[in-house]
Every structure is written in C-alpha cells, then in structure tokens.
Length: 119
Length: 394
Image (cartoon, rainbow over the protein chains, first blue to last red):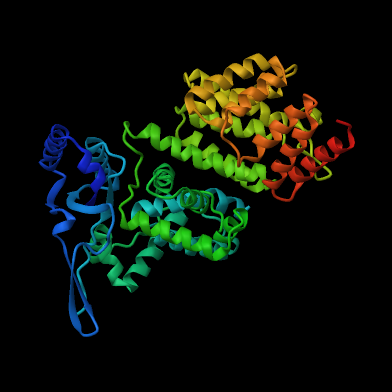
C-alpha cells in the first residue's frame, strides 16, 4: 500500500536547534529517503513564503501567509510503499527518533488510489 | 446446542473471512448470513459433519454473491476480483479444513493505530461474538455511539492497511501487551460494575489467547489472574452488599477456578515469566492463602512498581505496608502520590486515617471517595463506613 507521511514542524523547536544538530538530523533523514520504501518526497519552504488562494463572492482572493496560522506547520511529504501500515509507521518512527523533538510530529495517511470518477 | 456451536465458532468464522476478504465489515455481514442460514437449515437437515467448515464456505460464497452484485467492491480486493473473473465458487467439501486465523484477527483489532475504546469494542464484536447492542449496554454508551465507533474502526483497518498478521518478533512483545491490556480492561469493566458477563467474556478471550499462544507466559498469567479474581465473585456480595475479602464466606469461592488459575500461574512461571501479569497473578494468589503473607505481597508489589511505575501499584503496596509497619508508614507513602481523581485512593486513605483515629480527616476522605463513586454496592459500603465514623466520638 501507499502512504503519505505528512511532516509537521514546529517553528520554535527548529529556531532553537543548533547548526551542528540540524546537520546531523538532515544527514540522517537523507539516508532514510534513499531507502526502497520511499518512492517520492517533497520539501516545502517555510510558511512565510506561502500565499493562500480563496474564491469568495465571485472573485479570487489572495492572502500573504499560510491558511492556518500556527506554530506547527506542514514541512513536507514523504510517500512510502509498504505491505501494511506497520511498515509506514516504522519509517515514521525512525524519522521522529532522528528529529528527536516532541513538538514535531508525523501524520501517516493512506493514499487513496481509487480512480477519480466523475466528470 | 446450536447456540453453543455458534458462540464457539463465531470468532473462527469471522477471522477466516477477514483473512479471505481483507474487510472486517464484509466478513461480519457474510458470517451473519451464514449463521442465519445454519439456524434455518441445521434443525431441519441435521448439523453438518464439519460445522465450522460449512459456515466458512457458506459465508465465503455469500460474500462472493454480494460482491458480484456490487462489482465496484470487487475492484478493491484484487485476488477476489481475479477469482470472480475465473468464476470460482467453492463447492461444499465436508473434509476441508481452514487454518485458525483468530490470532491474526486479535492483533488487527488491538492494533495501537486504533483507539483503545475501538480496540475493546471490536475485540468483543469480532472475537467474542457480542452484538453491538450488548457492547453498548455493557459500556453504558448509546447504541448509535458504539455502532459508529465500530464502523469507523472497521473502515480504518481496511483503508489504512492495518495488518492482518501476527506481528514480527521485534514488534510482538509490545503488540501482545496491547492485546492483553484490552482483555484485562474488559475483565475489569465487568468486575467493578458487577457486570459478570463481561468478566466471563474476558475469561473466554483469555482462554483463546492461551490456546493460540501456548508459549506466552504473560497470556497464561493473565488468564490465571482473571480466574483467581473471578473465583470469588459469588462471595463478593451478600444481599447486594459488598463483602470485604477477609469477611467473605470461603465456601462460596469457586475452588475449581482457583486451582485452574494456580496451575496456569505455575505454567507461566515454568516459562520463566516475570512480567506484570505474572506478578499480579502471584499477588492475587497470595491474597487467598491463610494467613496472608504480607511481606511477600509487599515484595511483589515492589517488583510490579519497577515494571509498571504506576502510582496505583504504589497505592496497593501501601496497603501491604500498613499491615507490616502500620497505617502511619502507609499514609506517608500515599501522600506522595498524585491520584486525586481515583476513588480507591481516597477510600484507602480514609481507611488508614480511620485506623489512626484521625476521624475528621477520614470523614473528609470517605466523602471525596463517595463523590467519585457511582450508585451501587461500593457507594453503599462507603456510606456505611462514613455513618460509623459519624457515630463514633473523635
């Protein structure tokens, strides 16, 4: 099955992190991303670079910043293919152990692979 | 007779169908149809030579029929889809045997990706064969709530790909703990609320676990613990009133259950078990022996404290300490604990204060315990204690 590991970061935790520590985490994460269960991944730039788009009262509305204002923000996605949920949970657990900050978290969601019917 | 076959076979049939269909909801519906058909046919045509095999084959065929009617579902289960293409339908083979897949089902139902409430309900439904209505009643929640909870859990097992498998060695200890915790929670729910049915249900589940995992000391010890506790259930109440262990009529104790529990505990110790259930079963056993060996009980609670670091265990150790060193030492131990919302903490404290003659404080502690206790025998017992204190001078 395919799963998305939805990576949440915490701004305060990351700001406090020393450069050396940051490098260690990144190197560890890079090694995990090279292993077979990972089929794709995306890193997002920080939330300050976000633009939010809405459609309201017949016109497009743009706002500077993320949709949800929070100390916790979406940092990226990793797609893994494993036999069952346990395999995906194991990858997530390994990443969280590497990151080692309790304020960050990974949400594991199964990918919906059913064809998009409609139109 | 039929009802007994049904009760015993439900878990086996559902498990086998989940293994085949990979969908708990479909499996349950198909099983229900097969059981209904059996209830109709068996009294008329006689019970088949292999009732379990008959039920599984019939339910599989029912499921295939259902999926044929709803082709979109067939896309979800590839293997089944292929079989449908090939037009496979199983013919009734009286000698066919199906592997017992209940263990795979237990581990799926008690997977930590499901909430504890859902784990408990699902285990009772799929393995215990209790109806959603019965489970709702047992846990004092509305039918709708329980029904939604179970449906959501069944969908999550399917959609999130919760494995239908016995966990690999490195995950097994942790996952087994979760399974045992669910069974013990069911047992305690029946115990505290005086709803014996749930306790009996937990013992049935416990027996299945021992049968399925004969080498697991903790599974054996959990069953031992439940049997030893349950053996006293007839003596725990007299005319609807709570009777404390020391005042119980021992002739009402179920000796057979106690002996079975002790044999199981010995078996767990022979397997070099030293986990929390082994320790708790050993403590439960010691409590039934006369005179009570409080020193040994205190020692075992110390070990349990090291394994679980639970304040409730420390509280129970304090009760043993009260017997060994007196209520003052026990009270000092209790004062360090953060259990302000736990009713037994306050009733234990109240009893120690009463024994020290600190009646005002004892009254306050009984009153706090009462606030946390639901109507019933436990409440009446505490009220009795409080009344006695109010009548005695300070």
